Image (cartoon, rainbow, N blue to C red; front, side, top):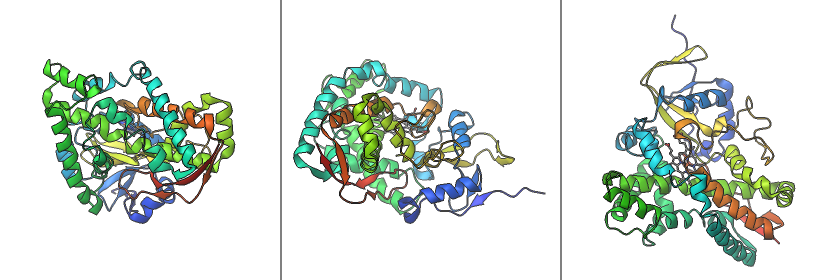
Length: 393
Ligand code: HEM
């Protein structure tokens, strides 16, 4: 007798589910560790243990065929970016990107970030009331990383749209994905233009890579994609984590007081924000071999959506998972992924957050919500789009 395949007709990419995803994630977790998503003809792993195991087993769960839920993107991206390669190609790209993102390499930028953070916080104190997403969370990701990379000012006004489109296109082939493709094409053209015409600021990361390409250390053809690997994933993700943290500190002023008293707590803020509301909802993997989960065989060749967001809320792994708690031991959360593809830029995001929350802690005693957060409707990214707040010094 053929065993019944556990399946779900839940639509993780419907507007209403995207707007309020946690009840659906919970339904999926309660239904089983691996479910066939009939609407998208792929598996979903909604629980922590199986999601974590899949991310650690890159031989079975390959990224080299792409990590999107649609064939167009997978054909276009496979084997190109660091995200969409398997070893050994992956390891080479990861080494090139990683050298500038080690704690030691990043330490050199700490003073500059602190200075910028104080300027920003002074401006916000002056304003008193503002949109925490546009006026606070977006400021660093839209200036710091482009500056580090050395990309010209001209074109930066499109970065938010382009970077968001790059993630959007990783979803299933729905209207949102289709609408994002022209923007993604523009992003690629911009990066090719920047890499090709020596527009990169001397001394910047981008310029260093250009010189490495000229001296044959890296393949010059890879340069636009390497620039994109730095820039694309660095914007919305960091904006989302910073916004979630501000929202939660407004809801839990006691935790803000504790952080002001003990600045060592800042180190855990991004981890807890990213655990609570994972900025990347999930990515797909392609199975290279049959894989058994709880008596069910997921056949080689199938696609599997690993839900970082649901895994991070799994009651089987986390106590009171819906509660923001800066004292929580967040080790092992998958909001930055896990295994060989785990986020190579998380140190940079944390350094940005460290500078910003330290500057806020110096001067701000309270965040008060001046309206409810409005969430983006996006295939892959979870993030607040507007968060009106008033701050008190
Ligand atoms: C709070 C901010 C961030 C979050 C939540 C985040 C999340 C993630 C996640 C979940 C992955 C794993 C993808 C996978 O499993 O396939 C990842 C990979 C990656 N991230 Fe981040 N990220 C953040 C910031 C950044 C920044 C600032 C950069 C660039 C400087 C960056 C660059 C990358 C790259 C290049 C990869 C691919 C690594 C690989 O495939 O080996 N990310 N990120």
